Image 1 (cartoon, protein in one colour):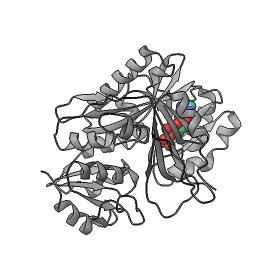
Image 2 (spheres, helix red, strand yellow):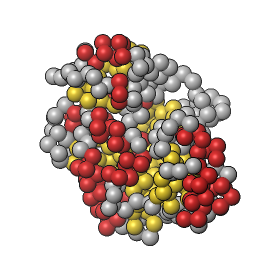
Image 3 (cartoon, protein in one colour):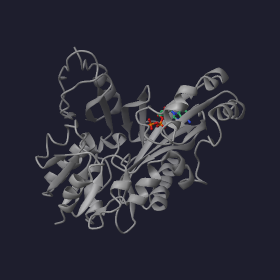
Image 4 (tube, protein in one colour):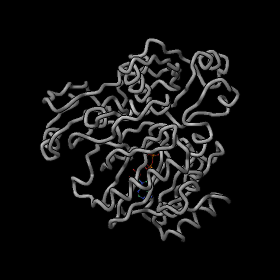
Length: 369
Ligand code: ADP
């Protein structure tokens, strides 16, 4: 069996390592200093920066396949290592780590109209305020996550007062653009997984809810909670098309906005994704196991679910974590982070059963005291 290396040491790496362990596949982890989640389950974790090419080289020499928990990896440090298979490929990661190159990749598919900043920020903001009639979303092209790097503007004044937001990305030579503000009814998401033969399977479409830019809950399957079958079929088709165009190998997440039965692609992540965590308890094969199967050239497992489901993210709050009394259809997944910073993702709870019952139960949880 090939030796598997995971680049990154957070919760996604932790859950990939756990899925591999269960399958009898040994993993090694290369973690950024300070990350604890993967190390808590994978004894073979080494700490290092990507710029430390000596440590990185020793790590990469010891694995056959290297996978990523984040697309925000400086690929320039990896290009010289020819004896390891990076999956998805470094080209694929480079396209998808930049929201502007994502836009080029999905051209012709439905996504919010956008305007790239190619002149001074003053001219750009002026153009945005005219073109989008005072309503737009400013975005950094790179290194944004959990709402960081996204500014929703609802008035011309808000747009014109966004100089600081622009500077934060421009001063590190990152791209900047504005998007049409979609007054969506719901946010949808779907996990795809593409194998080495180029076959993409999709998991059910889900509805996701955000709390100030951070995913807080996921419910599904979407067509059991009021999303039209035509919409979910369209979403699955788009996900398959994206898998093909980007030549992704492994699991990937695509987020959408739904408005009047129409869907708009929001963003693509070439990795296991928060909106797919429910698959651990509701699907026949989790996104983590299927990611590992895909990159090792093993046949993919079923992506069907055996129940409706809910996933609740546990975001850090003031006070101590109060372990909830979970009924039998709930499962807690904990990331073992010692510092419970405000709004930091600390774990999640998956529930399976009837959506109405699940919603009622989670509304009674008091997760911090
Ligand atoms: P991140 O990279 O932080 O996940 P997103 O691009 O997903 O950033 O944006 C975070 C949230 O901001 C979205 O989940 C959505 O609620 C809102 N948002 C982003 N783009 C738009 C848009 N064009 N129209 C309306 N809301 C948007």
